[in-house]
Length: 116
Image 1 (spheres, rainbow, N blue to C red):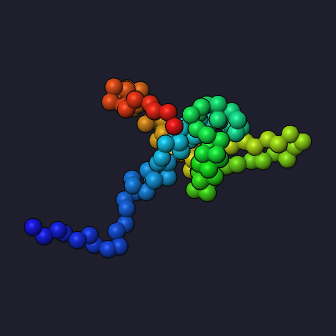
Image 2: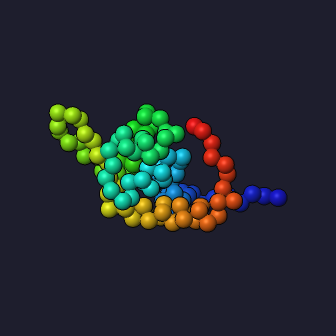
Image 3: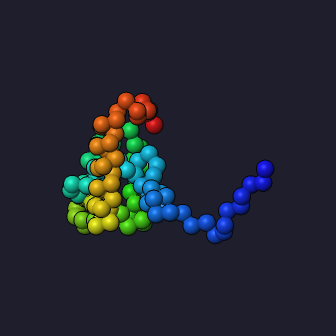
């Protein structure tokens, strides 16, 4: 049986490209916790206790590069950095919230939580 070749260049659909923005273990959790209000780094780390400081920093930078998270560095004696969602991030926050609600309704289908 002959395999059918993909017509090149392959262009992923909008669903694939959107999921790629918040795929991975931590991005959706970060978006979920930023959806209501700006949050400082340490507070965000407390809300997601299994993420390491290094990984949280990395994921926040990726989300910032993707235009979903805004980082505001308040130039004060005590360094204070606050993260919030951009308008694009807020619109994706609605998607993440819908996934959260689906997960609560279908908890028996979800895999058991694992430690990093």
